[in-house]
Length: 81
Ligand SMILES: [Zn+2]
Image (cartoon, rainbow, N blue to C red; front, side, top):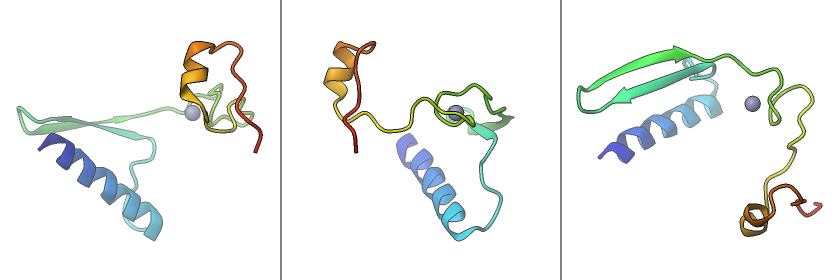
């Protein structure tokens, strides 16, 4: 049941984002506590040094071979596009 609840929330966010409607969950994090049927909302702050989404990202593509990357994370180079 829990994956269904979270999945519906994620799908709802995707639909809102695609349609440009509502208040997207950008810069906010929902903590859902199923046992008490409660949730909390936290604000998130963007990391200006984030290797993925900063102004100068060093991670610019997806890993294409997870096994190779896991075996040699320091030397792994993703294949060029
Ligand atoms: Zn980031």
